[in-house]
Image 1 (tube, rainbow, N blue to C red):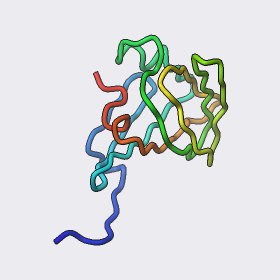
Image 2 (image 1 turned 45 degrees about the vertical axis):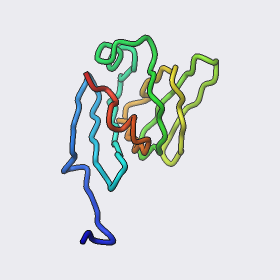
Image 3 (image 1 turned 180 degrees about the vertical axis):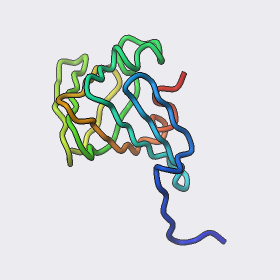
Image 4 (image 1 turned 135 degrees about the horizontal axis):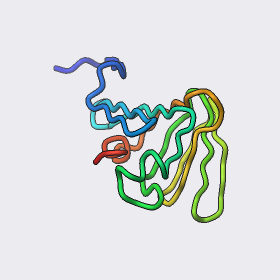
Length: 121
């Protein structure tokens, strides 16, 4: 019989991916995947992740919360947002992003398909 309450820690991630200036750590929590994405200062999606995934813009759906740092996101529909600590966000496929400032941006994401596949070769 499984426990009714358990905890997980990203230090024991199921999978860790490290494209340029990027760290993606995933955990399986029951039937869901959760990911912690950390991007370093100077991180730009088109320079750091596009070479790994082979698309002109990010085609992943993101649903998460920013823990620290700042991320600027531009969508191909013309919408733009700057995300900071405490912001909950949804980014639909077709966007670009870059870290802003001198501090890493740390995000926790809850979209099961994205968490399992993001930045995978």
